[in-house]
Length: 626
Image (tube, rainbow, N blue to C red):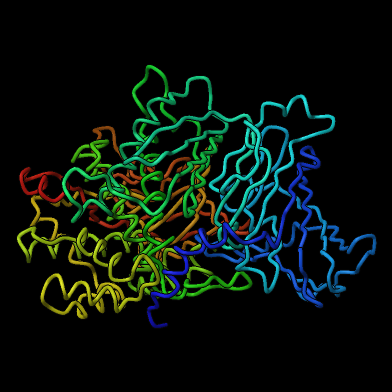
């Protein structure tokens, strides 16, 4: 699809134009039965078509999987005045209603909400959350008209318990009370769909970043939560990223102007979960409570991961919500929306999430290299990198990335992980060729200007790279993005003062396995392509019960001697294999498969390595990372 700047201009112009236009579609959302996890939604269409079609999205932008939100919609009714109408279902997520002219159409239905993620809807007696893609029917023909959302204050038997509940959303308030209940406005359905709503008695705090007010709310925080620490660190991330995108070329002393007037972070702290979803002026996040900063304590390692998540989703405010694939110029909510560019929009965002933590001073060089090291080793331990290109992985996201099975590492590559390493290769190559006069930072800002903060193609990336470097980058993108060659990571990192050490790999990596260990059982989850375990005949779902060791036994002198019969051992932890094998490389694995005992001849590999990065030349590393 050719790049279009018209869509970008209209995107920016909608809000002020819509402010003077009447609301065409209004949604009343009521917390009808939190114990049954049911919202009641009433949709009023001021001027319906004679045959009015409505539909619920099958996916939510930013999460590339058909999720079938309509499966939770129930008891749809329609009326005009006192006249009841009969909605006619057209397919899995669409309905049609025959209407009389000149009268508003009112639709009513319930939505079951028990998905405690960032992608759908949730409601119980402790908290509410929803994306409009899960609750709000899209009115065909009126998607570009202003939409209204009214949030009804809870009533009924649970009213007292829910009295402290508040509202958080990026939508523009019209008439609301102090706790946020009331009416909001969206310029169109896209803005409504891009503005999640958090409900509950949550913790909240505020800060200003480069003159822009930011609100941070946390649901489920424990008493030990250090909110001041989180606010201070989030502020540093936001200021660093705003300046990354907008400070270049501005007059000295002026404040950068981001493309939003306010921003809302919505963090749901649970026992054990992780994820985030970007929106145009807000983000929905989820983390484990143990990852939150605690009063009077040094933050846990998981807190760095949480800061990286905050950095990642905030960076998306520019990179995918505005600068975006040309195929996303206009979302089609009824089907998959394909693009080959997720390696750029998710991968490059993944490159910058931790790098900008370093630039914000929230982690040091060693921590950054440890995080980078982890990503590199994950790629090197994924045989699928030889099978699928990162561009193909982007296109296949709908059927592969979000549908993980036992063969996923053998057949696919992550457009997050490898995409981030493609970004690293471009960044370090540019720096090496230009003596640090140009970098990937310049590429990102040039794309923002070239595409007018709107739709982008791979041709734009190539054009900007050529403009900045004076040469073509087609060969590199062909190899790194559209090919399966190994990335030149070692030589590029060494050129920036980073030492790359080859350390012995863990036993599970040497064997080519991914396992789960619990209650003295070793369960095989994945058998990696080309490894000793695959050669022996292991399969996902096997339980590794024990081993038989051939050829030697231990005599009275303590020395190994020939053994007539093998020794057999129960295997409760994989690492115990080396304890029992001793110097022997040939053994027999005893596994359980479909309640049958199977004996597999296994040869242990002599050597296998994993990467370890370390700072070798501090000045070079500093020049890159800061």
